[in-house]
Length: 117
Image 1 (spheres, rainbow, N blue to C red):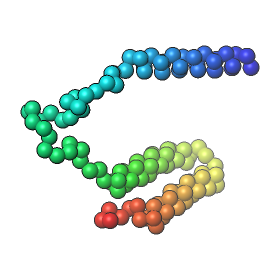
Image 2 (cartoon, one colour):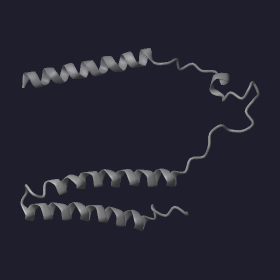
Image 3 (spheres, rainbow, N blue to C red):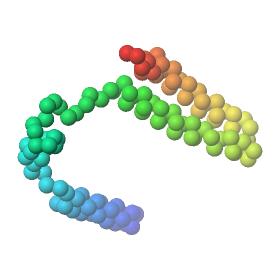
Image 4 (tube, one colour):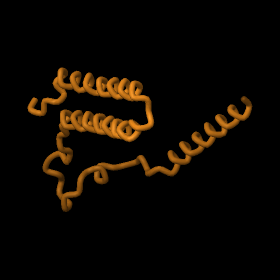
């Protein structure tokens, strides 16, 4: 118990030291107007340099990544089919795929997959 507490304390001390060093060595926070503005050959910018970002695109990209990771978790199930109990393998696979389908139905029902809106 003592070694667990001492290791936790050492880990916390290292984390705090690293955070303090990172804040001390990070770039300067003092900025002026010229350094923050985009450079356009010495002229003042004509309009904002920031482009609008589509939240709909971001949401669909996140949904794609989630389902992509879940497919990557399904692929090893094919490899272990020979070494596992068929009833347990089928039950686990069906529950996992059912969770995927419920999530897909929920996203579809909420309208998150409609790109045109």
